[in-house]
Image (cartoon, rainbow, N blue to C red):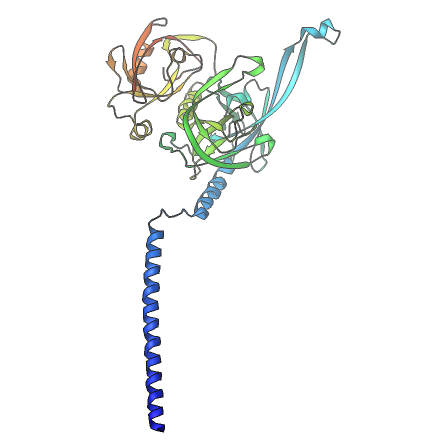
Length: 393
């Protein structure tokens, strides 16, 4: 009996061990299947980007650019007329005034001491002080001014140990949703950084003219959600590599309820205009006999074709249109591809320059234009080119 009990107990123990091992094997196999199914489900979704990686890129871009971004302190001395002063015994009708303003800019050519900014930041200035990130202060003068494109170059006299020029990127390769970084002096808060995205292209915005002048419309602007405030004007809009993709200019009207809508001049336009200002620094009022319609343009490249979704072989693309110019009056817009002029195919910028500049002012040229998949016909009355302003034609 005792041996029988031992035998039964032994069989029970062996059975329990075998059962436990079987349960463990089943459970491990079943759980592995569940984990495999769960892992497969996660893998099928798009992986999240490493936010730390983006942040490190942004921080690196800011550190790279900051030494070359400057604050501009501007003094404007002018004369204002108020006939009511004399009528009511409040003083002479003509009075002098002194206005203080500020804006932003960045080093464009350290060897020449050139700083790039908006025209509306320095236009009419009687004194300009450039303040660098290390609080170095240098007196500056206007080197070149292009109010129509709202860009200007100011020159500091002491060029010793200036920070390097910011690298200029390529706005034709930008995509909606990519990061955009604005650096400047909003509301006199020096070296402020804001971050957003590239929101859109070829935007148009109208701003009130200075000193009661007529409103001005700027076309072909880059839209960004990076907050831009008074004082940011003239500062750089950067990508995550620290390359300039635009020059911050204006914000959408708050009266219209707009929030988070800022505009910058695309860097490809900036490169063209700035290079022209370096060649022709002193604007004059005289005009030349060369034909002029008032556009900045560039040859077609693969990146431009991709951004416009243009599949044609010939043409040149309009980068910017001067406000009030013959091209503006004829309805040309940034992003237009000019395919033909006077019945002849246009293949390069040089082709169009030769045709326009060789046309007698007062006569018109006919154009065939591709505009986002539509064929548009335009007659442009050629004008005279201001000697101090020389866009492509």
